[in-house]
Length: 444
Image 1 (cartoon, rainbow, N blue to C red):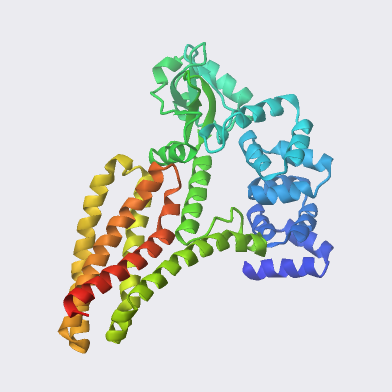
Image 2 (cartoon, rainbow, N blue to C red):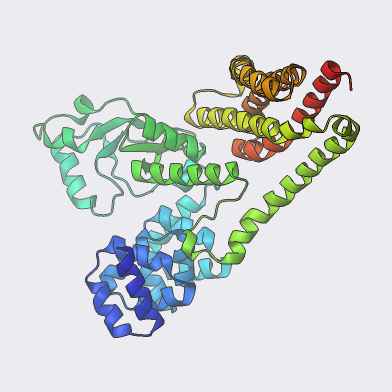
């Protein structure tokens, strides 16, 4: 497949547009999207215009919002309206967040009244809430209806609905009473009351955090979850595919921040070099300032190092082990926070657990360090290295476990408080511990 994509790129580079059009007609939509994501802005706009109208609509819907925005800005108003209106309201809102305000307002004016109203419902909720991610297009079934009445409504309104697999059941005031599945409807007789088929519904408030709601939807294996307002009236539906998109974005952000960078929020090959640079440079500057602290610690203990140069040989081993121990603990606790296994209320449980893990790891590595250093450099130095590994592992695991909880408590992303800062903190404190133990044991 990569060879084919390379061949398509050669066609657009050599301006063999007729050949490219024919080649694109032979591809499925998924492969076309992969091809578009590899191109620069200008080449992507050219390739997109070569697609047939139906294929272009399907491909546009599958692209990341950042790439959709670039395509929209390069199209004429008439074409923009067609592609913009083809999106679901929740996808439309995510695209608008990527566009300049003037372009977004212009596109809203092109929508018909119904689509504009549905989009405005989603726009009314703050970023980061489930209301911003839900679909206002759903089929609600009154609880006093029969299966026959429900099936008639599904057949008429189903084409515009986000999903039909899970249908909210409501009272005359649109208060959520339960849910019924399409399978229940088709497997029961037409005169069966909906009230006899509905079951208790898991629902989420429209102002609830989107990632938490997505985690709940995925963990409980729901195909869809009703979204309600503060008075428990149904205002939308949240589907499992949207939940998985949110969780994928969250995982990408955590992975990037664990590595000391900001998420790109778009495919790598289509990301401008300057944007990649900006996503990394801030964290590098922060870490560089932190590393300066480590240099200061070495400067303070310069006399100890001069009197026993062999001490410097173990510095990379000790600070590397401490940083890795802290990062392991932080990654584990950050993941547990995301899954809802722990919360900020569990701070002392987490601390006690990580202290024990750190002591166990430190004792194991400390014995190995004692034996290796003792055999080659003397048993006094072996004691220093062994005790330092025990201390550093315990300290690093404890701090690594607490930092994500502190971030959560402060309302920040736990990943931001994790690996980059922990490595810097443990490097500095680990060296202080090392040289203090060396002074006590070696008398330098």
